[in-house]
Image 1 (cartoon, rainbow, N blue to C red):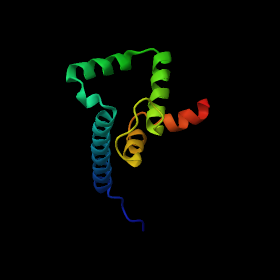
Image 2 (image 1 turned 90 degrees about the horizontal axis):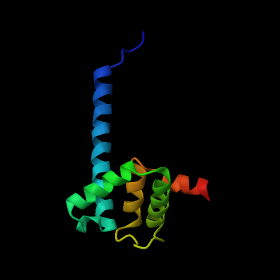
Image 3 (image 1 turned 135 degrees about the vertical axis):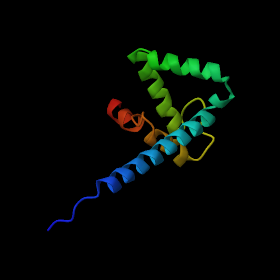
Image 4 (image 1 turned 90 degrees about the vertical axis):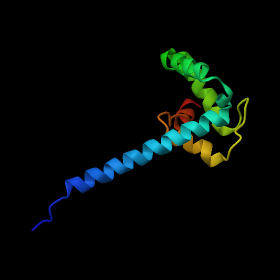
Amino acid sequence: MRKPRDFDAELQALTDKARTIKARRQAQLGELVTSTGAADLDIEILAGALIDAARADAGRKEAWRKSGAAFFRGTGARTRKGAGSDAGGASAGGASAQPPSGEAGAA
């Protein structure tokens, strides 16, 4: 006879995992803001820039993606202040985990 699945335990494990991922993503976003120097901006300026970025056309987003990929490689105008694994982790954990794989496809 098969052992019944404990759906409540599985659901709780998935909820805990989602909470951990969200917390890690939030921490990495904070690290990214700090490492790019955006922490020095007023909160209203940063919010406005993010709103404009979310509404931008595909051409501008692609240019920003390339600039971001160069930042994570350390070849951009501003180089990373933190460790390489921290900035790389921010990209891998965030919603835009595209720069490393997208860069290889674009080259």
